[in-house]
Amino acid sequence: MSASAQPEVVVITGMSGAGRSTASNVLEDLGYFVIDNMPPELLERVMELVTAAGSTIERVALVVDVRGRPLWGDVQPHLRALRERGVALRLLFLEADDETLVTRYETARRRHPMAPAGRMIDGIRSERALLTDLRAEADLIIDTSATNVHELRARVSDAFGEHSRAMVVNLLSFGFKHGTPRDADMVLDVRFLPNPHWVDDLRPLTGRDREVADYVFAQPMTTEFLDRLYALFDVMVPGFIADGKRYLTIAVGCTGGRHRSVALAEHMGGYLQRFDVAVQVEHRDAEL
Image (tube, rainbow, N blue to C red):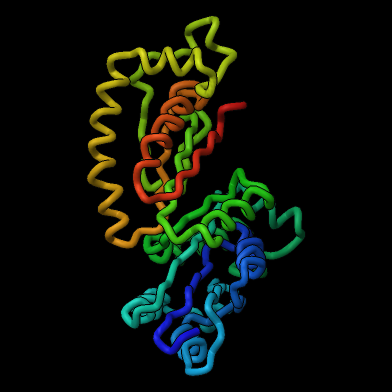
């Protein structure tokens, strides 16, 4: 690493049991130098060592969490200090809902670090409250409630692999009746459009089928909606790129997540290709 170069830094944090270990393993496989259970007070000192003359470390991942509670302080000032020094820092926050976290801990037969002798749910809620402000500053939030290990590995690899220099836009279709995604930056509700579910021939299909897409895009309201939405994208996406935003998750929801949201997410993905971004389209509920 040249004397003037700054290493890429990823700080991994979030809820205990949400997948921090998996994320750190993926980053290690991608060539990051990983330091686990990093006390926040040592972040700046570690970066001094990493950026010192003669250092060959180009990518470093630091796992910061509540396991070292006696050393846990106010993390945000340390992160801001690094950014003010010009460190290319990205904050990855992993979370999951309470029920999922309880199940994972019970399956692993482990105690929660914030409830060593008390009710597990109390420890989870205390940790979530402690991390609220830090979550608000995250560059990327990944909700692993409905994500298996292989899916999480792919998501982290896509976000931090070599191709991740451009902003990554994640388009996620979903059904409101299955719950709103917790990690979306923007939620678009398209339930105002006519529903293909009530057309007998279209009900078994999804928005990836031509018949459903043709039905959705034949509606005058769809055209007007997309014209206005894409005018917003034309302003918003270049603005985010100029501001240095690295990740944008747009969730598109209809009632069941099979028809309207799927067709529209696919169409939006095609439109966003015109910008200098990496586009990923995922259909959470299309096969439910």
